[in-house]
Image 1 (cartoon, helix red, strand yellow):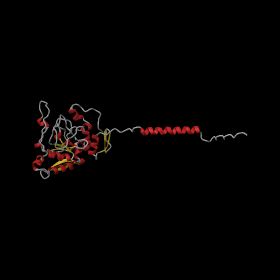
Image 2: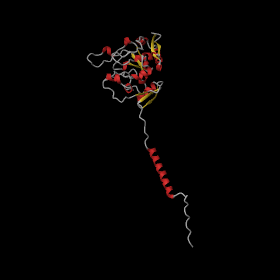
Image 3: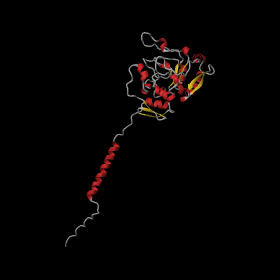
Image 4: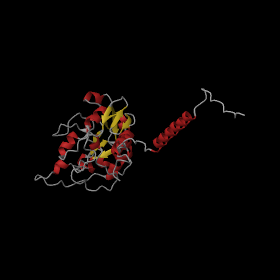
Length: 285
């Protein structure tokens, strides 16, 4: 009897070898997937705190921020850090500082003002293209957004031309109303003002004054001090002076306005709207 032979494999039947190869390919793909899942994700560069404060301070104008730029709501990109080290010469820094330099010095809020160290002027370094973009790059452009604000109407009533951009006029009205609630011996020192909007350069410089943008006001000149009035002739360090009531300063600061009395180059009559420097993440602790 001839033993039965196993049936021949059909030519259409799957090959065991081919099946094994398929399993190996599947395992290889699974391994690659596991490796990709285990690999650390590429993180985006961190956004500087200064850029975050700028966006928080001006949400109607700055719609986005990137690792090294802010994006205006009209799509314009403005570089934050130009990649250059800050100039060692302070006067060159005032002229050529970028947005990073503008945000570098931390403004101190409150009555406990230490005497400012050499060349410590938080807010005095300004990237001019930023403010020209925000408020206008000419007297005519700024003038389109001017509105009169009555300064301390119950006491003085002088009308001051102030920018409507960012609601600066509303901020100054609120400051005025709070000051008028102070005791007479305090509010009497700031009744007089020396104006707001004047398109001009800072004296002896090619840099625009913040009065050019109608976001600055000088008050209480008779009770103020200015570094150039008592500058030592021999080049010695400045001697800080202040007679200005700090109760008034605190009111201004609550409404996004910084004080020139915090500067080494002190200007105690001077106030300007700079909410980015008063943001919790960017002011001095």
